[in-house]
Length: 122
Image (tube, rainbow, N blue to C red; front, top):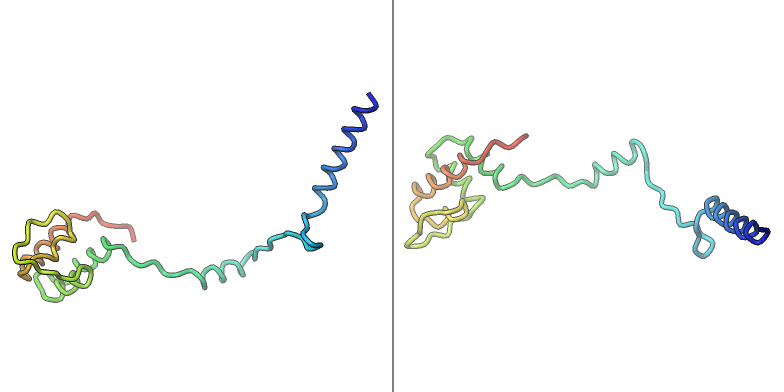
């Protein structure tokens, strides 16, 4: 009975001592200090990079330009640079529209895909 009591006392005191003092390496505590309050918020805002809009958001922004204009086609071409092919097949994805040689065909192809995209939350 005394040995069990001695073992429990030794384990309990060791656990209590481990909880009261922080772990150290070379006499220096291993404590990570995090900024709190407004200092943390301002620091995180300063280091946060603005998100680039998605391709879908860019395509929807092009829809705001007047339809069937050179400006709208230029907007689409900025997202997907044109790479005309002599025999372009029917586009299966918005990225395939850049292979159309004629500007009108390319514009209607882009418009078709951009109009099918559901409105994104702002």
